[in-house]
Length: 274
Ligand SMILES: C[S@@+](CC[C@H](N)C(=O)[O-])C[C@H]1O[C@@H](n2cnc3c(N)ncnc32)[C@H](O)[C@@H]1O
Image (cartoon, rainbow, N blue to C red; front, side, top):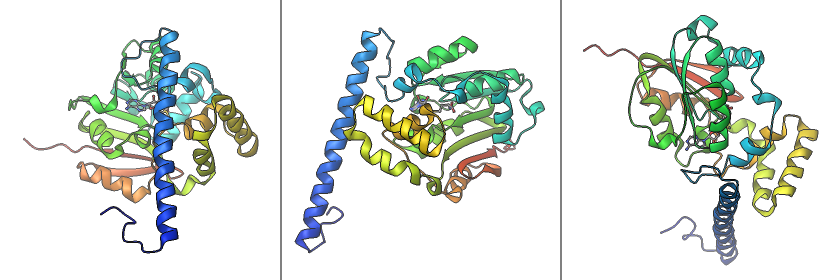
């Protein structure tokens, strides 16, 4: 029996059926628009190994002051992680879902050795400009390989179909004594995006850009940031307690919530006596 089948009122049953139909249409629209962008990228001769084009548009076409490679990124990384600059020196780091590589840039400049990957070909292309160790890859294809001192996964997991599975994948890359830092959306700070996400499927690209511009004027932020918050198919959000449980379930200790609005949290994988 599906949810709602026990509801007796014909009106309520009808409403549920309408909602189900809408969701089916939205899913079909997403598949269709994904296919459309994929065709565009193929026309541009972009190498689309994974076929995921959800994030292509923003990395290929919407530049942002927040992703420019500058000293500010280093300050932001230190502020987000609440780690000392000396922490990064000589460390082997992984930037999982690196985007254009703004955090890769910061870690490299703090003296770390960094491997970076993303599912978006345009993001990878840009990140490669600053880090030769960048590859096109899906987080879900990570095989357990606990070799990193520091794994950073910022703003990625909440866009996956199964975020906690993605968490386990990145956790599997952290070596004993190493640190995992993630950022995911906090449910309490999603209100401004709800309407846009609802409207999104019915808008074409031009209308979507216009909507984002309006949001920038109303609430601030950047065009890239708004697009990034509204365009992805999956936008899960959490409470800090839920994320702390993810860390605990994977055996992490010394768990620290470094910012709450976007849940920035890190933990240490303990040494296991052999
Ligand atoms: C909000 S952006 C954050 C990018 C980067 N971490 C930053 O903070 O600038 C989310 C990124 O996750 C990447 N992404 C989404 N799903 C992915 C997956 N399954 N595997 C790898 N990367 C993925 C997207 O391509 C996008 O670059």
